[in-house]
Image (cartoon, rainbow, N blue to C red):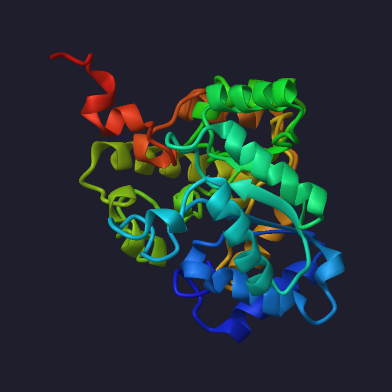
Length: 330
């Protein structure tokens, strides 16, 4: 949420990062495509004043860097998971972050066009060179996580040690397969959007006007209340807000504590745009949800359920391109 996608003032964004560090947060996650490199630049500025050694610094590659994410066109050699792009883009990220090494370098999304062995080989070389300390995946389906682990073992390559999936009370699909897989392989799990893109902020209530936000402007489909899936999210968010109030909690704390209670989860990634947003989330690490509250959550959104498909973060290519799911005929 730093830069053009959220808070454009670098000084304000740096102040939020410093406030987080002072509060005890020691992990910062960003990506090259966030505000087209601007987010990495802000993080680099924030850590340049002697604070780099205080944090585990993570970033990601994959998305296009010459056109805004989600728009067509662009140079195919300035995106993706190929060796060519990885070894080029890691240098760009290192420069923007003003650091000599990246603690965790992550593949932002799977890619059909590049074999995972090529990606793992390039990342292993960067690890051996000391430019990255470890590497992981983000929003990979369970079967691709398994394939990557098998490839690492067969080819004697470094392996993905973390996975960063979407996970919240409204987006629970990964409980069915991905989280058991990460547990099996001993991977760290760093869920993104634990507040479901703001739906679990307490601002989405039935009978009230939907709040405006930078995310809603950027991704209107995820917030269009004429969509039945978003209506289902609104119903659930309203019921969850009532449950949080009855439990003596803020909805924000309950939502973050929910992700932390799963034994496969290492740490959810929060995305505050203001100091107030950050302060409203910090106390969640101390909240312990009892079985009674968790049982009620399960009634509102059953385990393994994702209420809106577009919140999954990744659509398999075969669902987007009919050519990939039809037998070739003469």
